[in-house]
Image (cartoon, rainbow, N blue to C red):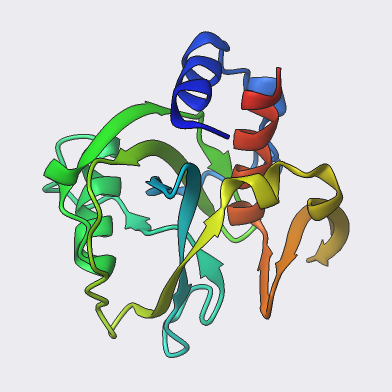
Length: 191
Protein backbone atom coordinates (compact mmCIF):
# COMPACT_ATOMS: atom_id res chain seq x y z
CA UNK A 1 0.00 0.00 0.00
CA UNK A 2 1.34 3.40 -0.95
CA UNK A 3 1.67 6.07 1.70
CA UNK A 4 -0.94 8.45 0.26
CA UNK A 5 -3.51 5.65 -0.05
CA UNK A 6 -2.91 4.66 3.58
CA UNK A 7 -3.22 8.25 4.81
CA UNK A 8 -6.48 8.78 2.94
CA UNK A 9 -8.00 5.52 4.16
CA UNK A 10 -6.81 6.01 7.74
CA UNK A 11 -7.98 9.60 8.05
CA UNK A 12 -11.33 9.27 6.28
CA UNK A 13 -12.65 6.31 8.25
CA UNK A 14 -14.35 6.98 11.59
CA UNK A 15 -12.74 4.95 14.35
CA UNK A 16 -15.26 2.49 15.72
CA UNK A 17 -15.23 1.31 19.33
CA UNK A 18 -17.17 -1.83 18.37
CA UNK A 19 -14.10 -3.13 16.51
CA UNK A 20 -12.04 -3.25 19.72
CA UNK A 21 -11.16 -6.66 21.13
CA UNK A 22 -11.11 -6.37 24.88
CA UNK A 23 -11.37 -8.14 28.18
CA UNK A 24 -14.51 -7.94 30.32
CA UNK A 25 -15.37 -4.60 31.88
CA UNK A 26 -14.44 -5.76 35.38
CA UNK A 27 -10.74 -5.41 34.48
CA UNK A 28 -10.03 -1.76 35.38
CA UNK A 29 -6.64 -1.81 33.66
CA UNK A 30 -3.41 0.00 34.35
CA UNK A 31 -3.08 2.84 31.82
CA UNK A 32 -0.54 2.18 29.06
CA UNK A 33 0.15 3.34 25.52
CA UNK A 34 1.90 1.89 22.51
CA UNK A 35 3.14 3.49 19.33
CA UNK A 36 2.26 1.82 16.03
CA UNK A 37 5.29 3.13 14.13
CA UNK A 38 4.79 2.98 10.37
CA UNK A 39 7.83 3.47 8.16
CA UNK A 40 7.70 3.99 4.39
CA UNK A 41 10.54 1.99 2.80
CA UNK A 42 11.04 1.27 -0.91
CA UNK A 43 7.47 2.15 -1.84
CA UNK A 44 5.66 0.28 0.93
CA UNK A 45 4.68 0.77 4.54
CA UNK A 46 6.22 -1.33 7.29
CA UNK A 47 5.22 -1.74 10.93
CA UNK A 48 8.03 -1.66 13.47
CA UNK A 49 7.74 -4.27 16.22
CA UNK A 50 9.90 -5.35 19.14
CA UNK A 51 10.59 -8.57 20.99
CA UNK A 52 10.40 -7.80 24.70
CA UNK A 53 13.33 -8.75 26.90
CA UNK A 54 12.93 -12.19 28.49
CA UNK A 55 13.69 -10.96 32.02
CA UNK A 56 10.72 -8.56 32.12
CA UNK A 57 7.91 -9.20 34.61
CA UNK A 58 5.07 -8.51 32.16
CA UNK A 59 4.92 -10.29 28.79
CA UNK A 60 8.57 -11.45 28.64
CA UNK A 61 9.80 -12.40 25.17
CA UNK A 62 6.56 -11.43 23.46
CA UNK A 63 6.30 -9.42 20.27
CA UNK A 64 4.95 -5.95 20.94
CA UNK A 65 4.86 -2.35 19.85
CA UNK A 66 7.14 0.10 21.60
CA UNK A 67 5.20 1.27 24.64
CA UNK A 68 4.54 1.00 28.31
CA UNK A 69 2.76 2.27 31.39
CA UNK A 70 1.73 5.88 31.77
CA UNK A 71 4.12 7.69 34.12
CA UNK A 72 3.03 10.62 36.34
CA UNK A 73 5.34 12.92 34.36
CA UNK A 74 3.63 12.09 31.03
CA UNK A 75 1.53 15.01 29.77
CA UNK A 76 -0.71 12.83 27.60
CA UNK A 77 -1.24 9.28 26.42
CA UNK A 78 0.47 10.25 23.14
CA UNK A 79 3.46 11.51 25.12
CA UNK A 80 3.66 8.10 26.84
CA UNK A 81 3.79 6.24 23.50
CA UNK A 82 6.40 8.59 22.02
CA UNK A 83 8.54 8.57 25.19
CA UNK A 84 8.51 4.78 25.33
CA UNK A 85 9.44 4.47 21.63
CA UNK A 86 12.41 6.76 22.15
CA UNK A 87 13.53 4.87 25.27
CA UNK A 88 13.06 1.38 23.81
CA UNK A 89 14.20 1.67 20.18
CA UNK A 90 15.74 5.15 19.78
CA UNK A 91 12.88 6.57 17.68
CA UNK A 92 12.95 10.29 18.49
CA UNK A 93 9.55 11.89 19.01
CA UNK A 94 10.39 14.68 16.56
CA UNK A 95 10.85 11.98 13.89
CA UNK A 96 7.21 10.86 14.24
CA UNK A 97 4.08 12.43 12.74
CA UNK A 98 1.20 11.34 14.95
CA UNK A 99 -1.76 10.40 12.75
CA UNK A 100 -4.27 9.50 15.43
CA UNK A 101 -5.24 7.02 18.11
CA UNK A 102 -7.51 4.03 18.49
CA UNK A 103 -9.64 3.55 21.60
CA UNK A 104 -7.95 1.72 24.47
CA UNK A 105 -7.83 -2.08 24.50
CA UNK A 106 -8.48 -3.76 27.84
CA UNK A 107 -6.29 -6.82 28.15
CA UNK A 108 -7.01 -9.88 30.26
CA UNK A 109 -3.68 -9.28 32.01
CA UNK A 110 -4.94 -6.03 33.52
CA UNK A 111 -3.78 -3.27 31.17
CA UNK A 112 -5.75 -0.61 29.32
CA UNK A 113 -3.58 0.00 26.24
CA UNK A 114 -4.13 3.00 23.94
CA UNK A 115 -2.60 2.55 20.45
CA UNK A 116 -1.15 5.72 18.89
CA UNK A 117 -0.54 5.59 15.13
CA UNK A 118 2.57 7.41 13.97
CA UNK A 119 4.41 7.79 10.69
CA UNK A 120 8.21 7.77 10.89
CA UNK A 121 9.37 10.86 9.00
CA UNK A 122 12.87 9.73 8.08
CA UNK A 123 14.95 6.56 8.25
CA UNK A 124 16.61 5.87 11.59
CA UNK A 125 18.78 3.20 13.13
CA UNK A 126 17.42 1.15 16.01
CA UNK A 127 19.05 1.96 19.35
CA UNK A 128 17.71 -0.82 21.55
CA UNK A 129 17.47 -0.59 25.32
CA UNK A 130 18.48 -4.13 26.39
CA UNK A 131 16.71 -3.60 29.70
CA UNK A 132 13.39 -3.65 27.85
CA UNK A 133 13.89 -5.00 24.33
CA UNK A 134 15.72 -8.05 22.92
CA UNK A 135 15.29 -7.12 19.25
CA UNK A 136 13.45 -4.89 16.83
CA UNK A 137 12.24 -5.63 13.31
CA UNK A 138 10.03 -4.41 10.47
CA UNK A 139 7.12 -6.22 8.82
CA UNK A 140 5.50 -5.02 5.58
CA UNK A 141 1.97 -3.82 6.31
CA UNK A 142 0.91 -5.70 3.17
CA UNK A 143 1.63 -9.00 4.98
CA UNK A 144 -0.88 -8.15 7.71
CA UNK A 145 -3.45 -6.79 5.25
CA UNK A 146 -3.86 -10.31 3.85
CA UNK A 147 -6.68 -11.77 5.94
CA UNK A 148 -5.17 -15.25 5.55
CA UNK A 149 -2.28 -14.06 7.79
CA UNK A 150 -4.59 -12.89 10.62
CA UNK A 151 -6.13 -15.52 12.90
CA UNK A 152 -8.31 -15.75 16.01
CA UNK A 153 -8.12 -18.52 18.60
CA UNK A 154 -9.30 -19.12 22.14
CA UNK A 155 -7.45 -18.63 25.40
CA UNK A 156 -8.66 -19.62 28.84
CA UNK A 157 -7.64 -17.58 31.89
CA UNK A 158 -9.04 -17.96 35.40
CA UNK A 159 -12.00 -19.91 34.06
CA UNK A 160 -12.93 -17.34 31.43
CA UNK A 161 -12.66 -17.80 27.67
CA UNK A 162 -11.20 -15.03 25.53
CA UNK A 163 -10.77 -14.59 21.81
CA UNK A 164 -7.09 -14.07 21.05
CA UNK A 165 -5.65 -12.75 17.80
CA UNK A 166 -2.44 -14.29 16.46
CA UNK A 167 -0.25 -13.82 13.40
CA UNK A 168 2.77 -16.02 12.66
CA UNK A 169 5.43 -14.13 10.70
CA UNK A 170 8.65 -15.90 9.64
CA UNK A 171 10.09 -17.25 12.91
CA UNK A 172 8.00 -14.90 15.07
CA UNK A 173 4.62 -15.41 16.75
CA UNK A 174 2.65 -12.19 17.17
CA UNK A 175 -0.37 -12.59 19.41
CA UNK A 176 -2.57 -10.97 22.03
CA UNK A 177 -3.21 -7.26 22.13
CA UNK A 178 -0.42 -6.54 19.61
CA UNK A 179 -2.07 -8.81 17.03
CA UNK A 180 -5.52 -7.40 17.91
CA UNK A 181 -4.26 -3.85 17.30
CA UNK A 182 -2.68 -4.85 13.97
CA UNK A 183 -5.96 -6.53 12.99
CA UNK A 184 -7.89 -3.39 13.93
CA UNK A 185 -5.54 -1.19 11.90
CA UNK A 186 -5.92 -3.47 8.87
CA UNK A 187 -9.72 -3.59 9.14
CA UNK A 188 -9.81 0.18 9.60
CA UNK A 189 -8.00 0.86 6.31
CA UNK A 190 -9.77 -1.88 4.31
CA UNK A 191 -12.96 0.09 3.74
